[in-house]
Length: 221
Image (tube, rainbow, N blue to C red):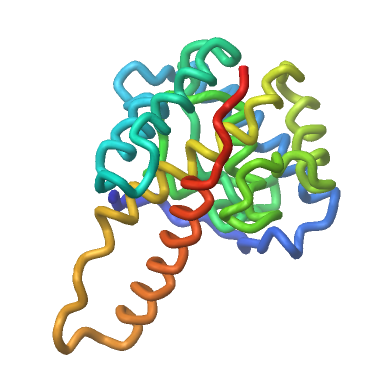
């Protein structure tokens, strides 16, 4: 878990369900523009997304999930996408950007890593479907298609990379589940009601992710 301090940006955040098609297109363009800037910065000092996933898998108690699930995800992705050498935001969802007069501005950069463009796009649009729906690519949705359209107005995106979206969703679910295992400590006496409510919500999310990951079919080449 991380915390970050950033400069304030004027502009509202808009929920995914409230974005119109033109705003989704602009959101896709903004992700591409962020990647263009990131390509000039590099990510040699950042952890790789694949390392984060395998680390999360190692943090999960034994017997909960197949022991090789993290390695299976990484081994499937690398031949298709190549090395994860783009500085990726990690979570460029609508609640992590402000709509300024000149366009969207991203914040909440505590999940940055060496990653791939399609990984950011997959994570951006994942909330169009339930968090535990892993096999259907979120980019198949109307919002997902418009997001990709906006992205391609600025930056090339290999259509073959879209094959990776459902596997990236599986990897992100594993990463989220592993982090929840670390974050969910035991209840404390006298803790505020909001803490207990948050823990209950996170426990439900973790349970849904565990069931989805445990029942996910083996990856096909």
